[in-house]
Every structure is written in structure tokens, then in C-alpha cells.
Image 1 (tube, each protein chain N blue to C red):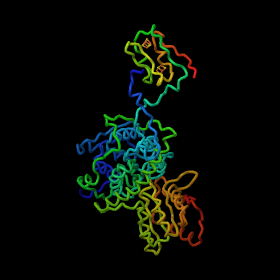
Image 2 (image 1 turned 135 degrees about the vertical axis):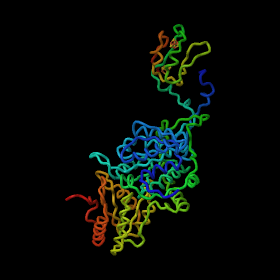
Image 3 (image 1 turned 120 degrees about the horizontal axis):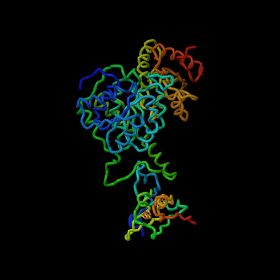
Image 4 (image 1 turned 60 degrees about the vertical axis):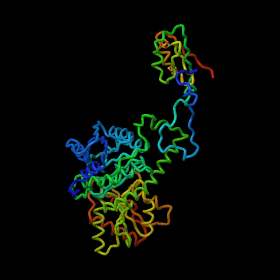
Length: 105
Length: 393
Ligand code: SF4
Ligand code: SF4
């Protein structure tokens, strides 16, 4: 379970407007973008090899989503609901602990 | 406050001051500059409190800063002209799309090249589809009154749209005339502080404005603006009426009709040139012509219903356009003709292209136009639809 968003993610709902009266007057965000699962854009998925990880958290800083989170044991993990497979984390990791693996769908 | 003899630009600056604007972001351009200079002077002299002046490096940034300020709930004002307005174009859509009631004075100035600093309406009319309300002032008094009403109309809970108050280069902007200003208490009573639709300073409920609108939602937000514009017609009339009742100058009509009741021919146009036209109507009437004038005050929203009412009772409408849409015709003419197409009212309409780049339209010109219209009505057919009236032949 993704420890970063917990119940916020579980409760994130897409807001769908059925009639013009339900729309707000102005295009402001009403909910949370946590309901946008950008994970389905992904072609390559980052896979973490904990034996190489030195817990520097450079990947965590560089990830453009917040898709990387820090687990209780201090290692990082990827929330694949949001990871869009850009490969930035793998590129930045100083110990090459992250490999991008082609994903079959 | 006593009557003052001031320029149209100073009328705009005083109105902004009396409206208690909180943020002004602007960039200088002739002939607008003396508006924002005057506002800077108010600040330097300590005549205004709580007014943040943001100097920027371009008009695009000026409007961007106004949008940001307005999104925090501040009453926001700016001014520009011609090329400066064109540079703002992208941001004009933003202000309207984010439903922010920024008020801007645009001093009509001809677009270059050739360089010109004189009066021409094509700059503001080219911003027709941005979602801004547009009011064309005939004289300095209307600039002052227009700016005050603009805040009240634009900020109205049923409108929430930006408003452009438009005055003529030099003819109004730099010409001194009597302006009857209001007492600060009168303005405060007429124009209470803004109640924004939303504010970015609502830190407990953070949100973003104008995020992605997919094909599933974009359409509905456009409809909301269209509806607010329609609604604005009612609010314009209400506010114009209230202004008249309180201060003696009525603005309840979006088209000001001048001696049109028994007129066969009506001259229709916008802005300062209508002052000359009204003068000409006086003189022509004393010579036996049955003529009147229709001054279109509000171009957006367009007063369709009022135009239809007028068109039912007249034989001919001479539309005087101090602007031109290349490849088509005068812009007011185009709009007016379009409105009447699906109605029963079909007066003969002719388009006179006048005054581009500040060329004067005189009383004698209006007489010549009246004679030309008379002939057309007698014959029952147009000699030509678009007449480049002043052309040296
Ligand atoms: S691939 Fe991109 S989105 Fe996915 S975890 Fe790495 S940096 Fe983040
Ligand atoms: S950048 Fe590499 S080493 Fe550093 S925390 Fe991330 S996976 Fe571990």
C-alpha cells in the first residue's frame, strides 16, 4: 500500500458533471488530482533493486509525479498508479538501483 | 466634488481612484500614459491608501499581473492602447476565462504600420471575441462614469467578467472638458468593496484556476461565459438606471437614441465621433432633414434587442465605422446587419468608413452622408454597400 497518500488516494473520486447546473461558474479545481491515475501512460516501469539502494532519496526528489515514496524500512518504492514511466528516477540514481523494464499490457 | 476641467485620461484616473482600486499594473503607451502617470502621482502624493502599483516590462505582463491580483480578490485596474492592447491579447482571454472583473481603459489608437497615435477603433474591436465587455465613451464625463459602472457591472455576482472602457485618442484622452465628479462617499455607497467569486487567498481550501478542460468539460465553461454576457445586459441596464437615479446621468440604454422618434434616417456609430454626429443632427433638423443618431454605448454584450426596436421604425441606417475588418466591412455594420437578418426589420443599411487613423468627421461630412442616404431611400436601392467616404479620388 502506498504510504504517501493512504486514504486520500482511496477516497479520491473523479468529479463528473451531468448537467450544466452542476458545473462551477469558473474552471477551478474542485477535487484532487489523486483521482488521475497517470500510471496508465506508462510503457516502461521502474523496478527497484534494494540490494543496490543506498537510501539517498535522489530519485524521490527528482520524480515529477509524487510517485516515489519512502517505506518504513527506509527503502523507496514506486506507486504504480501514478508512475508514468518517464525514467527520470533511473537516470538520476547514483548506484543504478532502478532499471526501466518494458511493460507488457 | 466640484466640477473639474480635466482630460479624458485624468477622468479615467480619478474614477479608478474613487473606485478605490487596490492593484494597478500597467505599462506606458501613448496616448494612454497620462492615465497611469496620474495614478502614480496619487500614490506619490499620499492621496490613496492600499493601492499597490506594479510596474511591469510589457503589456502582456501588465495583464498577467492584473489577472493574478484579481484572482486574490483585489479590485484591479489597468490601461493601454493599440499595439499594447494587441500584445495583451492572449491574457485578455485568460481574464475572461478565469472570470476576473479586471477593468481596463483602452484609448483607441490606430494600429501600425504606418505608425499612428490617432483615433481608430480597430484595436479594441479586434478584441471582440475575448469575453470582455466593451463600453465606448463619447466624452470625458462618460469615461469617468463608465469606469465606475464598469466595476459594479463586471463584479456583479451574475457577471464576473472583465470590462473595457474605451475612449478616443487625443479627442478625449488629451482634450480638457468639464467632468462632474462624485463625492468619495457617493462612490463608496454606489460601489461597495468587491465580493469575489473565489480568492486565491482562501488558504484553507486551496485550488487551482484554469487547469485542463478536456472535451468533456470545456464546452460547458464556454456556455457559462456566454450566459454571463447575456445576463450582463440586464445588469448594465440596472446599474445604468441606478447611476441615473443617484447622479442624474442615465445609462439604462445600451444604445443612446438621439432624436430618432420621427427620424427616417439614423446615423449609427460609437465613441467620440457621435458627439459630432449629434451636433450635425441638430443642424440638419433645423434645415428640414428628418435625421437622428444612435450611439452604441455597449458593443459587448451587443444590444440586439434595442437595435431591433430602432430598426423597426426607420427607413435607413447609415453605419459610421471608425474601424475596418479587412476582407469584409466595417465591424459595427457587420454586427448590426447580422442582428437584423432574422428579424422583420429591414431598413436600408449602408456602411460609411470614416475617421480611420484620426481623420476628422465634420458636420458637413454628416450632411453629405444624409444627402446620399436620402437618394438611396428614394431610389430604394444602394449605390454601394461599403463607402470609403473620405478617400481622395
Ligand atoms: S519513472 Fe518517472 S514517474 Fe515513475 S517513479 Fe520514476 S521518476 Fe517517477
Ligand atoms: S536514487 Fe537510487 S540509491 Fe538513491 S534512494 Fe533512489 S533508488 Fe535508492
